[in-house]
Image (cartoon, rainbow, N blue to C red; front, side, top):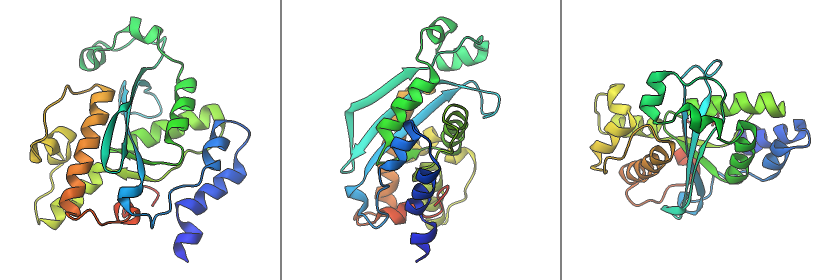
Length: 233
């Protein structure tokens, strides 16, 4: 009863009724995955944003990276990397970290167009991100600005899954130990270039599968098991 009244699908239906014609109406028309579905049977989209900073109100997205997981396999042919257009000067330290220059930003895709494409890619799937509050915050800000509507979808945060792993093994949880690349070291995953949206999305996808195997070695869980304690769940 609680799931029917307050679960993800119920919220989708409420947002659908509030949606005007446009990309979010199309997004909310697609039913969310039933939370009772075996996790292996779910299609996931792994997302990473590179931004000028972590202040959702004043900073902005400079690149998007995305890759999909189906059948607990990462499908490299679904990889997408997009530079986002900006006329604002890139702070020097940001350019050094992300290897994205002002010239690259001038020729990038408009953020509204990029999010429309992103919504199409995410429709009917479950979102995965590391420290997902960043991706969710920026997506909600952009959807409110351009489409006058809240953004919402089921999300799995690999940082929160990692906390469950640490708690299960009675290990101390430090903020540094929850960083993406430190968690990858824990599972002997290869080191990729940091601060690139696509490589970080791939890194998160691999980490998700490692965490899943740690939490559910027989991989017999359902989606609702992975959504426990997640944002909006």
